Amino acid sequence: MSALKTILKATAATVIVSASAAYAEDVEVLHWWTSGGEAAALNVLKQDLEGQGIGWQDMPVAGGGGEQAMTVLRARVTAGNAPTAVQMLGFDILDWGNEGALADLNAVAADQGWDAVVPDALKSFAKVDGKWVSAPVNVHSTNWVWANKSVLDANGIAPPQTWEEFEAALATLKEAGVTPIAHGGQAWQDATVFDAVAMSAGGPDFYKSAFIDLDAEALGSDTMVEAFRRMEVIRANVDENFSGRDWNLATAMVINGEAGFQMMGDWAKGEFLNAGKVPGEDFLCFRFPGTQSQVTFNADQFAMFDQGGVVSDQQAALASAILSPSFQSAFNVVKGSVPARTDVSDEAFDACGKQGMKDLAAAASSGNLFGSMAHGHANPAAVKNAMYDVITAHFNGEYDAATAAEELATAVEIAQ
Ligand code: GAL
Image (cartoon, rainbow, N blue to C red; front, side, top):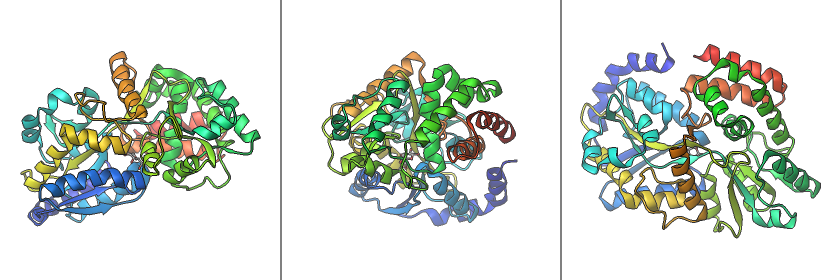
């Protein structure tokens, strides 16, 4: 039995007993959107609700990727005090949904016709047994590179299209005394880079076999060894203070011209915008070299915790605000993500946002859209964390590339 199941079993009674205490005028929202760009985007939602007379109790838990937030959530549920709504990703939503901890949003969904406008890739993480249990906010993707335009221009570098061109650009920057890659050495950030590097090294079939189907052969293959070898190239091009750095501080290095590139999901764009930077003028966005036709996605959703069998008015208002087309546009323009509805115009979006929307639609229709391993959309938390451990240990020099591939296959087998 998973730790999650054990906690829920042990605390189910407490959760039900305390549910009535959670009926408040406010919504209490647990999330990890604490960087400047993330907070600016969250404000769009807060203001929307406040306009409807619903107060917002903020429950921020810092830590990109949301691992710490999920730990706090477990503690809150254990204490019989689940928040009204919780930012959540992929398999975590399915886990809580399967445990029966989430509210049934079908009435709101039917009212707003979610089934017709939310893409299937998101629906499969938002519905459990035909029941909507969370409200999709956006679609992010992880296989992006963010670059400082003047740094690239000053060094005669055009956005690299292939891994080889990327390696050459890194060498040029190093030679010029600029930190080639801004990176934060935290497990989820190492894994975010690995999403793109593995896709680039092995292509979509390899990514799917290794990370989604968890095929032992793919996990331990020569292609995986090559992916780890490329991570060593990345490691050789980060500055010496990378360890433990928050992702938004790495983005700031690119914003300030201290580094050339950052490989990060498109939430990084929120930081550039929040700093008053303009895409195409101050910074560039492009797909990680060799992954131009693929999208590795993660979608933020707000899962609503069951408040005693009925969806509270506040939860219904929050869910319906999130899925409204005007909110989907206003929020995602600021956040860096793209809408979770297929019928929202790209008019208000900048060039990176427009490209993101186009890429997502193209990848979905050509079979090149895959859940992000690093952000909980390829496999459940136990497997994801097992992968994190190996990727990070290798990044920090504990294993060579061949050993890392072997360890990855073993770790995944044990975690399942
Ligand atoms: C992701 C999340 C994004 C972004 C990022 C860094 O998991 O989906 O919305 O905020 O973490 O915090």
